[in-house]
Image (tube, rainbow, N blue to C red):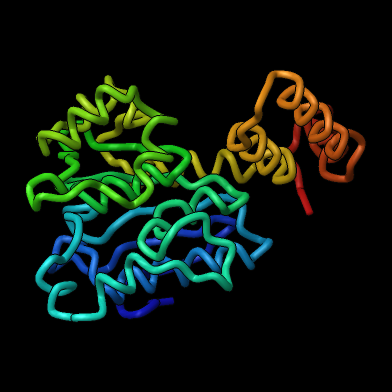
Length: 264
């Protein structure tokens, strides 16, 4: 399925493959791409059969950031990108939802990073639960070069994966770092010579586990708590929803019988 002529969505064996499909422009973000991202997120959210998502790209580059010429050619584009849809459950504005929307999904999202991962593309990758990058991929927060700040939710997603001093350095200098350097900073989960294959394999592994438990894990680590007591209470509450459920019992039986589990 091709959405807005910009993003390909394919679902197979409980895994959704979301692929930027504008390789001739290094998958730069224009208005149709932003619209496609939001549409894809909604489609995945409404499909209970999906257990994991791989976010990848056609061509040599994951995403070279904002298509400045394309966006600036539309006088209403900036207003749209910075607007908030009051009818939807968005924590931020239109452009921020393209990042934060991946965390609102109750299934894990794995980004496969190749080539350029710049600006908005870098921030979109932060919305994933895991990032698998080629060692020689290039990552950069480019916005400072245009005299602006990164504003696609990096202040929310960035500190959950990397130290604030690293994030400030990247945002203030616009320097490029390799996948290897990003790994040492915590911005990348792991390195692979073939990131999409590695991401798909990880998605298969996760999809073979109890989907209710996987969703509970994401909820567990994504929920902010005012104190330890409320955090521990959530652990208990989530566990109670899983214990003796059909899928949990299937996991137990599959382990005992040494066979692949068949979850509902």
